Image 1 (cartoon, rainbow, N blue to C red):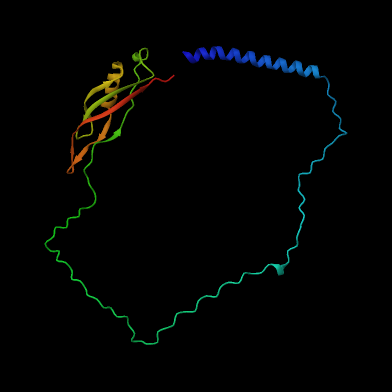
Image 2: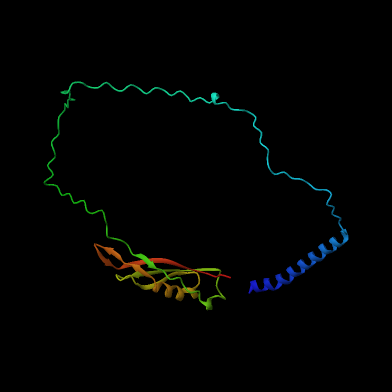
Length: 200
């Protein structure tokens, strides 16, 4: 509604301003009179830049830097029977036959319920007249082992007009169920906040 009023006032106002500026510029041009253009005065613009060589570089001036000499190779061992000695004690391996070494696979299949599909709520038309620009409903529900939302209930709400729309939306959500010991389990007491924003 507000945008329609703005449009109805803005278009005629813009047209008036445009025509006023047009007539002002037309009257200014007609007062200046004829402007004589003579072709006698021409301006030459050279966009190429002349480069001058200021120094000649001789090949004799370019010399390679002197590099350091590599170090001499290490002396070679001529004795074929030369072997380094390994002195020290070798520790014994511990007896691990009586230990339980179940390290697992590193994969923990247990998980909490994870949302898969969240359908946004429909803004109820009947709530537009008495709603603030942003309303919200906090809901609590359970997720059954199949991943469906069951037992939705309103915890808090900024406007009770939105409660039914929020519950309808949450009932269509789908979850990956909670898994404990490899079995799907129900997840109780999941809380979420559903927001309604008035656009326009």
